[in-house]
Image 1 (cartoon, rainbow, N blue to C red):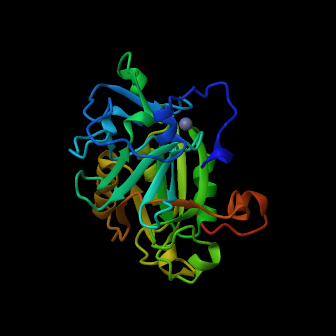
Image 2 (tube, rainbow, N blue to C red):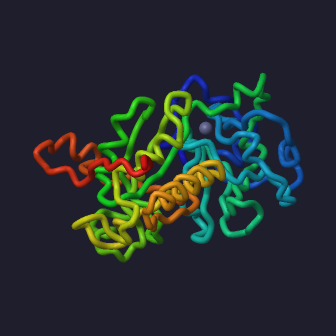
Length: 298
Ligand SMILES: [Zn+2]
């Protein structure tokens, strides 16, 4: 029961007994019975309980499982937790804690290889008025280029960047600590998640800067920081980001750089401990671990 998570908010909608059974008591509706399992229209799917938008219609796909299926979510809208059954991963509305369903990976149903299996009863559909309403207001990028203090410091100050967060991603350990990542045994890279306004700054501009503020030709190290937690990696969220990254790497190779940056679909990102955030801004006397070198101009 997720009582502690629930917002005491005027937006909270009254629920029917069946909706309560699913959203509050984490039940499951029978497959092929909900209103939205076979529903495809342009718009957004919002939390029935609190109204927060969770999924966009382009993220929905035909899965034949009998429940609404999505291969991605609106950034930050969906929370994951280990299910009480100890095997599955439960998904919840990040805003109100309402139960949505479960998320599965590795089924190879779409390129993203993820299926959010959501109860229709947990969702309400909102029709898009026009295409502009489904245009996301923010986008997200994840870069790993050695010590995250320096990468975050460069990216955070750009116009159009809403936030830059130091963290860990690309490894096996859940909720890793800095000490664990420093052993090099979790598989995680020190990384920075950037939330940005795509109308002000493009993903390409961010990615170009990323390739100039770290050395993408160093394998599993950046300068004195040695270990695969300092590897150069770009974690793309969609095919468009991947194509941009591939194009930039081709440009760098044409300029003579033997780029070793790994391209990977964005995995779960774990924000680092608070004391790592804005680290260089808080410690101005510390020498910067990153500097910009213009690599795209010949
Ligand atoms: Zn909600």
